[in-house]
Length: 322
Image: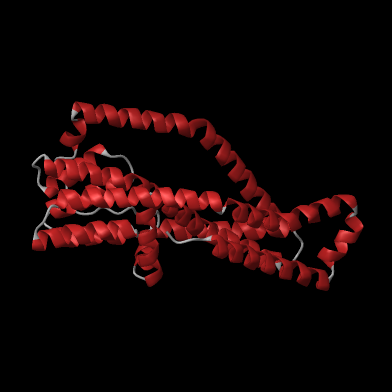
């Protein structure tokens, strides 16, 4: 009874909080953005930050600093910090851990309310616990793909700036100012690092660590070799931009040719669940045996495992490295 009441309170608070956020949050964010633009245009932000300006890297902290320090000091915290940085989300490892624990508990409570199966409760808790990390990985993947699409434009801008007579560091500053997220902010970090005293080699290597792309490694290697041996860097950057664009053309052609296999995987994954729902509507008494009997539960678990393995197997078959 206590668990049911607690789950009801948690769900009610979550629904009310979501409604309030949906109503008031867009206007609040729009007002904050407008205020920040006005402050930047009037120069007030620079005057107010003059007394406490710093060139140190600022990190976001959670509401529990002790938890942040404990998480950041572990190997898991280091990996989580890197994922947060690559995803572009302004949060901290401690906040992610707190959200993971909270969603894990909420998932277990909700599952205990609606699904009276002992095996489903730890699965729901594990899914809730992994949800924040999965979201960060999803955001990181989208951000890296967007970076890869914008990267040829950055190379073209670097090449044109170098041909116009600018130094490479100045050209990086132009890329940071002209291009949008995520290419602009990433080049801004690299430009600021070398501008504040970090050697250019280390700053570029840090860029290749933040953005795990083969094209970025090619770019860093080309720039470092040109600085050691000389050569026409603008021509090298033009050739690299051409190669990246041609590779994107081939990737799109591959996606067209493998579309049938990808949709086959989606259909095969969704077909058992859809059939189970249809049979439950048609003959619920027969389906109850599948959920109540131990043998039926084992069959459901085995079907889920085999479906998952089959889906990833199909994805592996149709995945073509370009």
